[in-house]
Length: 286
Length: 319
Image (tube, rainbow over all chains, first blue to last red; front, side, top):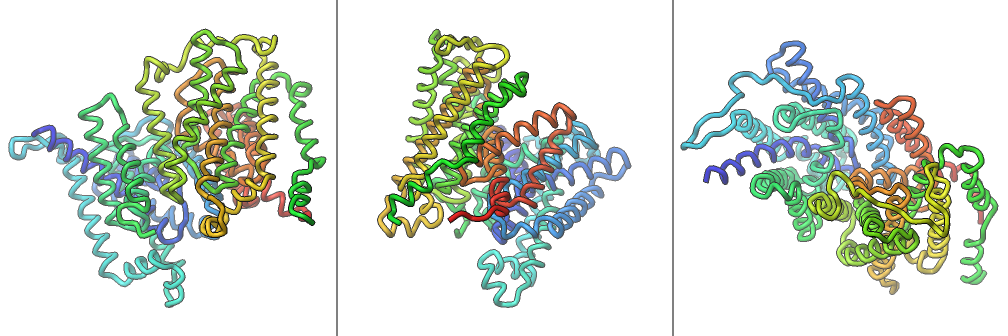
C-alpha cells in the first residue's frame, strides 16, 4: 500500500513537472505548426536564473520562481520577435534544423557561464524532509510541487476558458485562417502565447532543479520527454497534455520502482501503445 | 518527348557529378592523415543517403533511423567477434538484418503521418536502444562490444591509417549511391515524390501508396544496416551509441543541412557537419556545440532547404 501510494505520489509530482515543461510547446505547436525543439532551452534559462538568484544573491526560493518565469518569458518573446517569426512559412525540416541549432548554442552557452556540473538549489527549510499523513510519509517538496503546479494548471485552464485572450488562443488553434478572417490578430496572440509558454517552461526548469537536476545538457535531455507529452496529449490541448504528463510520470516512476532492470522501457512502451491507439493524441483533433 | 526520354535525360550523368566523385579520392593525396575521418564521413554520408530516401523523397520523417544502423552494426560486429572476420559477408549480413527489421516495422510505420510518425519511430528506436542496453550478455551493454577482429578485405589488411577503411567505405557508398540514383530516376522514384506531395491523390489515381512506402522504407533500412556494418568493421568496435537518439537526430540534422530530397544532400551535409565538428572540437573542445549551432542557424537563415537547396536558387534552372 505504502509503495503504491508512494509511486502514485512521486509519479504525479514528476508528471506535473513534465506538464509545466511541455504545456507551452503543445499550444504553440498546435497554433502555428511551428516546431520549436528549443523549448527546453527556455526551461534551462529559468532553472539557471533560479539557481543564481537563490544561491549567489540570497533570494528566497519562492521569490526566485516568478523571476524564473519572467526571465524565460522575456527571452522567448525576444527570440520570437527577432528570429522565429521569419520561419513560420519555412518548411518543417528547416524549423527543426534552426531550433536544434538554438539548442546547441544554448547548451554551449550554459557550459560557458555555469560549467557542466549538476546544479543544486537551496530550498527553504519548510520544503525539505518529509511529513506524515495516514501513517505514510511524503516528501514535502513533491507535495509542494503538486499543489503549486495544480494551482497553475487551474489558472491556465480558467484563463483559456473564460478570458477574451483565451478565446482568441482557442480560435487560433482550431482554425488559424478562420480566426484571421474574423479579425483576430493571430500573430500578436501567438507572440503572447509563446511568451507565456516559454515562461511556464522556465518555471518548470526552476522547479526541476531540486527534483530531477539541471545541467547544461538539459535542453537536449528533456526534449524527448517533452515531445512525448505533447504527442500523446494531442496538439494544442492543455487538458490532454496534463493527462499525458500525469500518465507518463506515473508509468515512468512505476517502471523504475517495480522493474528497475527495464530502465526507461515502460515510458516508451506506454507512448508507443497510446500513439498507435490514437495517432492524434488523447485529445488531439488532427 | 516521350516519358522514357524524360527519364533518360534526367538520369544522364553531368560533369559536376563526375567531378564530385573524382574529388572523393583527393583525401588519399591531400590529407592522408585524415583518412579515418574521411572513412567516418563516407559512412555517415551513406547513412544520411538512406534517410534521404524516406525523408526527402517519400516524406516519411523518422527520428529513429539509428535503429537499423545499430542493428547492422551489431550484426557485423557479432559475426566478426564470433570468428567470422571476412568483411564482405559481414556487410551483407548487416544489410540483411537491417532490411528484415525495416520490412517488419514498415507495416506499422507507414500507417502514420506527421507527429505520430516521428514519435513512433523515435519510440521504436528508444525501445531498441534500451533492449540492447539490457541484453548485456550479447551486446556488452554500456561497455560496448569488445573483441571484434576483422580479417583481410580481398587481401588488404585494415591498417591504422585507414587507407583500406576509406577505400572500402567509399566504394560501398558509391555502389549504394548508384542504386539510389537508379531508384530515384525510375518511375517508382517518381511515384514516391508523388506520395510525398499528395498521398491522397496518388491513391486516387491508382498508385499503391502504402506498398510503395513499405518498399522504400525497407530499402532505406538495408542501406542504413550496411552503413552500420561498415562502422563496426572499420572501427572494430560497437558501442551502444550506434542505437542512440543522438545518432538518429544527428543524421537528420546532417540531411537537412545538406538538403533533403536531393541525392547529394546527405553527402554534402555529412562532409560539412563532420569536418566542422572535427575542426571546432579541435580548436575549442568544450564549446564546439556553439559553433555547430551557429552554423545550423546560419544555414537556415541564408540558405533555406539546406546548402544544396540554397545554392540551387542562385543557379539557372535547367529545362
